Image 1: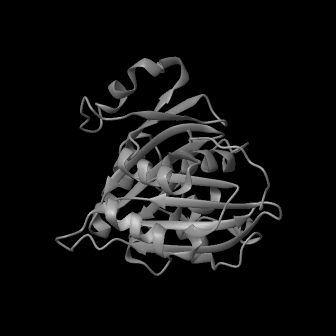
Image 2 (image 1 turned 45 degrees about the vertical axis):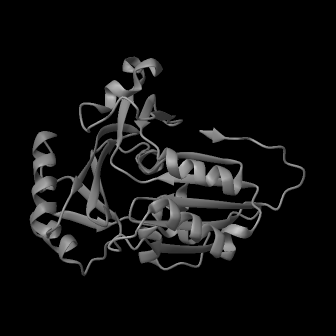
Length: 273
């Protein structure tokens, strides 16, 4: 969604993208003329502090960090939470957004709901944006667009599945949670997010999902992205029970930035927005 559109009198050909959760925020700047990533960074929130207030923390970051004092042609915000669900076009009615979410999360009458429309498939992503954080960004930037992180993740993985008839599973690893996305030739077969603490949690959900979709662990391909490496216990346990496991190939992303492979995997969503 576009918030508070303003007139553009001149262009700097720079874009700022912010990915925000309740635990921290990542951000990157990009040269939109040359399609190059200029900088990427992440800030963890001090949630253990008894005086922590997310509104105060974000406001201070925006005021103190030189990156947020620059002027950009475009500012994009990605909300990172589990409060989302994908709805096929034939079942979608904009008048009943909250009803779609009530089956997988607790919603309240005063919650604000919004949705993204995927351009690559006839699907809508219904989600709950953080209104309090939206207000902070409005005050600071005036003009920005926002969407849910899963919209970017699923869209990009669907693009990568074009003309591939085999079912493929992708797992995006984040702090305390991971997303499973199963696609087949630009069709979304499954999207879900799970909390985890141990490698055993991960493999339980992977094998359970594979069983539900009739995916043979000896046959189907699994690709990891996000905050993971081949040396991690999470990758190793998946490799123990599933034959075809690898990290997502991010060579195409590296053509537009100087980040390492691990950084491109970790910030995949941010860099693809």
